[in-house]
Amino acid sequence: MEAPSFETLDLQFDQQVATVSLNRPDKANCMSATMWTELQACFEWLDEEPSVRAVILAGHGNHFCAGLDLAMFGDLRGSSSEPSRRAEHLRRTILKMQDNLSAIEKCRKPVLAAIHKTCIGGGVDLVCCADMRYATEDAYFSIREIDIGMTADVGTLQRLPKLIPDGVARELAYTGRNMDAEEAREVGFVNRVYEDSDTLMREVMAIAQSIARKSPLAMRGSKEMLLYSRDHSVQESLNYVATWNAGMLSAADLQAGLQAQLQKQQASYED
Image (cartoon, rainbow, N blue to C red; front, top):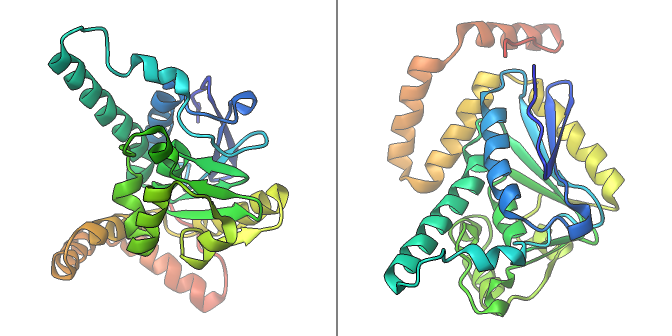
């Protein structure tokens, strides 16, 4: 495996688990233009790399992510002086940024976000794309876009109401207030809260390694079904999973799994 290198991300491997860490600690991991594009490139590579079975998304330094790098605002509308062309350029830029983060959601491998301290603005957009979220006791979340006079536009308002009660999502979007880790756990945004960053990373790695020991094909199918079911009716989703398993249920994986259960051993699966 020859892994890519990045300017704003740190990519590490522990057996079949990859850890992607936001790596601008001196800037509180605020999301520069380079980071946006590198996130997409990184998760598209992880999606294609057979030896990676689970991914942890974390942040180096004292903060998980302080949101969009404000230096980007000057370039968002482009160079044209004509209003409609500036508007079209901005729309295309927003769509590209949406795609940058959607690559995390589209990655076939389960993505576990490990969040400490600050997670605001674009950081919330980022972790809404993960499969699961875990946090430290001092973590907090905020949809800050409302405080700078804009509507959040790269995924939070579309994904968050599917993750927490609608009224809570609206309150956070309308007020810009902080939601602390305990409230985030109570409303179901994060799965668990840990005392500190070291405990967070150790426990999230244990969960990721447990996932990595399962059948990769079955895991990818499970993620595909859960995402599809979020956006489709029950009947459509039932039809899709029937079609999926009719074509992709692995006899080899099924036999390995059943045999391991009978022998009380860990099954071994092809990547």
